[in-house]
Image 1 (cartoon, rainbow, N blue to C red):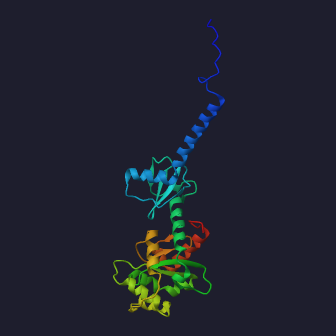
Image 2 (spheres, rainbow, N blue to C red):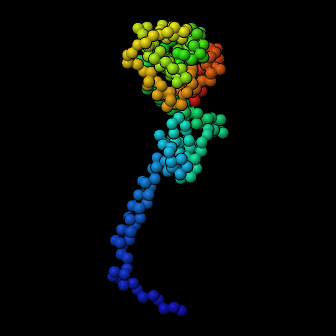
Length: 262
């Protein structure tokens, strides 16, 4: 049988209650420092830096996908695991609700950017009591844009307000100057319709929203015209947008089943 251990001596060799508390506090401080250092933005940017150092992440936000952040890079939505290990590029579908989570996020982002273009920066053709409203990015020299505007009375008769914003394309040299001239006209709607029918709007300069709407379009990822967005930010397919009858059906559906919250 082993003899009992001698009692501990009080002194420098024995950890006191005070020193143990100090050690415990130090551990907590170190742990807290590690947590603070790993912000979502830092975690996501570090993950991209390993694969594509040139990529700049614009926005990092919580995702409804468990364990992942939602990162916006330009107009792309990418998912990054919270430990920074996995990067997923593609659409996230909720199999339970059959909802495209990524498209909902895109639509919400589009809607936020669209709100920066107020009614005073649009050319609006609307019935007296519109049921629906759509935003259309347009180019005066775009053939399909002209075809769309030829049916403007039918869209209005169906209860649809069409709100035009300019997106002059690089493939149409001079389209930006035409857009500016239309905007500077005393009667913008008449000048717009005339230009869409092939008339030369001439040249004119004045404060105008053409550059701003072009910037917003690029931020959203819109590269072609006409591009139509519904009231919830949903992008409407061209085969639907070019038909007043199909468009009414689509807008009625979206009004009852919005992709993104308003």
